[in-house]
Length: 176
Length: 291
Image (cartoon, rainbow over all chains, first blue to last red; front, side, top):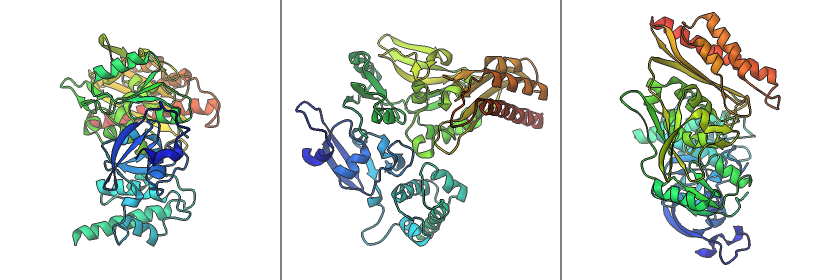
């Protein structure tokens, strides 16, 4: 697996230390040797090909790179890949089931929760962290949960509607 | 953006972390929540040779209140833990108010209070809060532990009093002697932005008389500001409208704001005055209701 991250290494000198990490990504255990300075976002995107995690501002401001680490939303551009060793990561690719969209994805589709779509993966994972903790949020609570994620297209109205839609759908699913 | 190359160690004990820092000989840096350090590494403002990741140290993710009311926050207690804390909600209104407005909810899942104190950003919220509360930091080094009062811990912008081979393991808020009240108000242009102005106010009252007061200011100087004159003006009397107004004026005088893209110096001073008065007025009103 040592070649996995070659494209993002600077010319590798023989003595550059690498560390073996083992991360469960979307339920699958992945092992790789990484340079300690590799960011989690880059391991996911370049190393594992999971390009649904976007890098936007690259300064832990915009939230486009949001993933779940052991169920909690974190900004993957602001965490080293080595720090994820032994942990579970969920990316946007882990949301949908084998044949159907996740209710949060359905919500964004039905309520037009995106325009360009760049912020959408981060928005949806921040929303998932919220709904896992609080299945019946108020509009204010949704806005609170998404306040670390920037969207430059929608003005947020439809994103908030999408999350509330998903909350209702998830509640009706768990009731039935 | 990529950090420059560094060696990475993830020790399993504080002693091991201290030994690694000692080996690092001043070129090592502790990584806790990383929400300030990792951006600095990426911008290459920081380029340590060795990163000592303390996230695997057991037993540092606590926050608790001792039986006498002393509050202790471990080095790996995240902002989000404090935001959801029933202990702070019941006992420490200044901290509870601040926990809700640190950075944004996602950053709060990783960042730590102790790390924020160590980072000593003049625009960091926690240093002002701990200043208002008269707290201290416990550091562990090769020769054991020592307590450093916050006023001595933050030595300047992005500078702290830790020796190169010490780890800050805990922040401590001493037990109150009276009834605790206070708050934290922050003006920010949007969630996650640095504070334009932040004001931390903490008072203790006994029979309606203020027995202790502390006021810390964020973002209005080269370092966290301890508005001691303003706080001292409150002690020994009841919270009257005149007293509140005088303390708010003194706090505004203690501020040393600079005009920048977040606002003019006069504007920021005005906000300090307004926020200090607002927090104290709320405390006075709630005391009146209780009486």
